Length: 617
Image 1 (cartoon, one colour):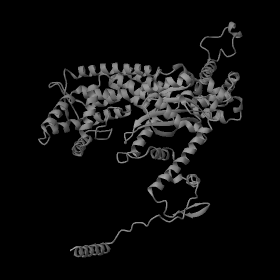
Image 2 (cartoon, rainbow, N blue to C red):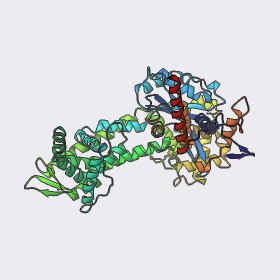
Image 3 (tube, one colour):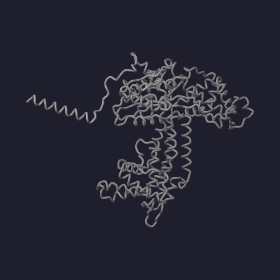
Image 4 (cartoon, rainbow, N blue to C red):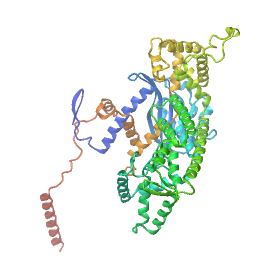
């Protein structure tokens, strides 16, 4: 094989070994890692997002993602970008172990201990300003947790409890009346999980139903929705049940009458069938599928790799408003409920209803069952809104509002004061008739006060800040369409315009704000990649190799765009002795024998054995 790097080289056969492949993988990953470090070094600030998970080898791994601001010249946007940084084994599961693990990973950025970061020692490096974790006590504990230890030395560090996790906990605490539905989803999943025969039988029933009913959602096998699953998976499971309810019930009925099924299993199936043919189960699935729709959309948005703190807060506000509007609507207008009610065939004489050829029993009337389910669902909906608000209040809400007011440029639009001006107001401040500008000034002052230490380390001047705010707001109102433009594009224009030298301190604050964490969705996505790489058949994979493979898979370019020059240069220089490219193989390659040669060898061996036995005799 030849590769051209200045000259044509013959690599020979010396490096065609697993050890050499591992070595080459390391240098490819190291080349990618150097590019990430260079992109981080050009910034003034950065944040980290951390989470732990056990891999297939039962090793507790701590994964770290770096969040920085990035100026995208192609799309003309300023945005937050998260990059995979490292994965390393956790020596101890307490706060000290987490701090030691994080500090070791960040040593390349000039940090020896994140619990006592000395700003004067990292002036030549970007400054750590935020940490994002989940809500485990070892992370967010104020006394013995990681947060408490870090804040005792640097109280200005922004600590983010991943709101995607908070949303999951809020929904779990809110839905108290869904135990029967959750049990149904779990039992259905395990019923079909490892039974290809049952899946084939189910597919046959679904094909028959498709000829009679419209099945819009797709899929046949129940979706797992219990345990540590995202809300989106739970809603998909509910929609699958609504769409395939008749197929599941008809198949369960068939299994209860099948003599090949064990008596104990048949008794369990009969119990499941009796509980699941209650109309309240189907109607409850439809209700909670509609309630979870805005929450699942919010959960998906919080898992976006380009999520910034503005987009996260705006999505939360939008989801909360959607839930309030949903509570005001009539239940009959909810889309999934409307779909279910349109498919029901009611038989008042026998207290039964039919849905997709499945007969369901009702206690009382259909209306009374729907009223009870609706009352429970609306109560849970109200509880969900309150729990979401409570979870958000864990953070510094005032600081979050200030960040939103400053970064969201549409809030800069000039608006008139609510109270009319009088003669006595003429001597007041010049901007009393411009509350938008006043709010922006207050917000930036609050942000700069909270992060004064890292800002001052990067040449920030609080004295010039008020005048710069007036300059940048007036420029945006005059020359930029802030009422119709995305805030990311407005900030890009403010960073690249000829007058950007008039507001350098505002741009420093902007870079800091875009570098703050809000959700750990990106970390969870990389954990999924880790489990695809280190499987049950690769449990002995070393952490260093796993780190290299993740670096290449997550951050590396596509193969069609990859240039190996940098990796080859690192490999070439990483030795005190020169590389021997034309070195022959250390041993001859194995040549498989043909059948004729194998027969001759076998005959020779038999002759030698016979002669040896004669000598012994």
